[in-house]
Amino acid sequence: GENVEQHPSTLSVQEGDSAVIKCTYSDSASNYFPWYKQELGKRPQLIIDIRSNVGEKKDQRIAVTLNKTAKHFSLHITETQPEDSAVYFCAASMASGGSYIPTFGRGTSLIVHP
Amino acid sequence: KAGVTQTPRYLIKTRGQQVTLSCSPISGHRSVSWYQQTPGQGLQFLFEYFSETQRNKGNFPGRFSGRQFSNSRSEMNVSTLELGDSALYLCASSPDSTGNTIYFGEGSWLTVV
Image (cartoon, rainbow over all chains, first blue to last red; front, top):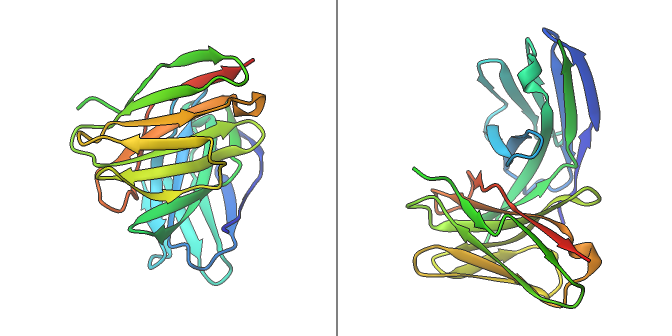
């Protein structure tokens, strides 16, 4: 089955710095890569996603890049703010039976110091 | 629109008992999926339903089961509870038939003692 590795497990930055979280996946059949943000005690929320036919996608301060050949994708957050502090999960999803099966990374705890 | 609603939010069960968790998707969403979140194993896919049919199932023992009703509401059941089943169980719904873009509920915190 699919295996997703996510690094780092903890990332501490100063407000205004950039943050980069990286994920690698093992199965080339995965073709949908979402990122979720989970604040303490709250539900995970989709913040950005990318499909395998796209190399990069940006939404304001957040961007995701995908390298299909190397089987890795990354989340980039620029001009970090304290409210960006949360756990971020990546996922690699592959189509099966008419839907997608996601495999999640273990999460990165991002701490933004004011 | 109301979000994904899960009940109960918190529950404590004894080893060997069984538990049923309920999920009401966002209105109009027909795909419902379930996930288990633990500190040790992270976030893991349990199963996904669409139009009352289970389309996919994750790598969990047969003690974990689910169903979906004609109104898209879903339930999951865990029988013969083990201590390791203590977790946050998240339900998510999707507006598209592939179940790709998902919206999570707040989850049900299950503690097995």
